[in-house]
Length: 433
Image (cartoon, rainbow, N blue to C red; front, side):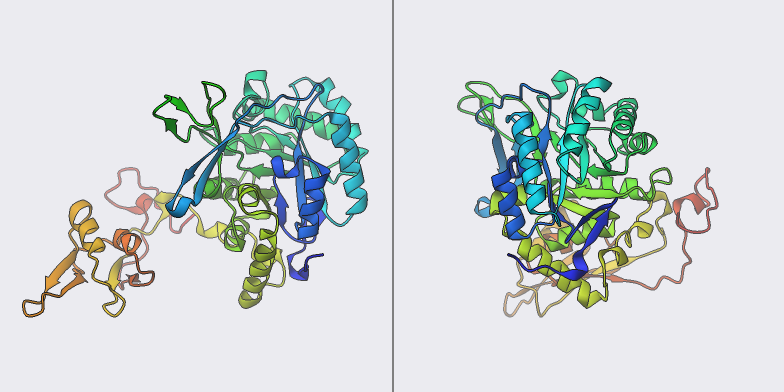
C-alpha cells in the first residue's frame, strides 16, 4: 500500500477522501481492475467512467491522437471515445464490490442519459444501492453523444443543465456534481444553472472540441476510422490555462461563489494541482497524465504537495484553497500605474541573442546588442527607458532566471481604467474589485 499524508485529506461536498487526487471519468476508471490498481497506487478517489442506458455505446477504432513537443513529449491529447461500452449491470456490480473493499476512497459515478426524467429516476436508485459516494452528471462530452441529445448538447443549454440537475436531486440523496463543457462562450451561465438546480458541486473542464492533425498523404484527420475521422475532445497539458481560467470565473462569480469545484484539465504534477486549489478547487481530477505515465504518478503528486504545504505552513488543503481568487480580477481593475522592466543577469547570459531578436523584431526595441570591438564578444542590455515590461524577453530566454522583471517605484497612486480621467465612462472605482 502507498504512503498516505494526513494533511491532504479532503471533504468535498460531503465526499471524503484521503487526498485530493481523483482519477477522472475516462478509460482509467472503466472497470474494477483499473480502479483497484489505482487505489493500490494511492489515488484518493475515482469518477467511474460514464454509465448510460443499455444497450451500451459502441466505440470505434482508432480513438486517440496527440500533439507532440520536443522528444515526443505529449502536450495535447485528443480522443473520440464514447462513454462505457460495458453493460450497466456489470458496472454496477463492480462499483459495489470495489466500494465495499475500499470504503475510505471516494467513488463517484458519472452518468449520461437522455433528457427525460424517467431515465434518471430509474438509474439513480440503482447507483445509490452500490454504496457510491456521489454522482457526476456528464454534460460535457463533445463528440458522439451530442448527436444523441446528450453530453455537450445539454451542457451548452443552461436551462437543460438546471432541469436535469433538479431531477437528480429529486430522485437521489447522493451529492450531485455537474461536469461542465468548456465548449461554450461563458462558463458562468451553466454553472449558475447547476447551482439553481440544486447541484452540490461542479467539475470542470471537460474536453475541448479539436482536430489535432491531418495526414497529408491520406488527406484525413487523426485518429482515423477507416478512411474518415471527426472532431474529438482535447485534453492534457495544453488545456490547463483554459481550465484554470474557467475555474477562476466560477470561483469569483458572485452568483456561484462558494459552490464547490472539482478542477480538471492538464494536471500533471503537484504544482498543477496546487494552482487549481489556489483558485478554489476542493479536489482535482486527473486523466491524461495517468494514461501516459501510469497510476504511480500519484505518489509524486501527494509527496510534492504535502512537502510544499509544510514549507508554506499550511496544515490542511482548506488553508490555501481559494487564496488566489481575490487576486484574480477583470482587466479594467488592474493598476495602470504599476511598472516593471526587464533585467538581464550578465553572469547567467549565454549570449544567444534571442531576447534581442524577439524585442527588436516584434516588440519595443528595448534590448540593445553591444559588441566589444577588441574581442568581438556580444552582450545584451535592457534600455530601461524603452522597456514596457511585456515579459517577452524573459519568455524567450533559454536560461531560467537570467532575465527577471523588476518592479519600479513610480511614485504614482493606484489607478485603474475605470478611474482614468481620459476614459469618458470612468466609474471612479477606488479599489480593485
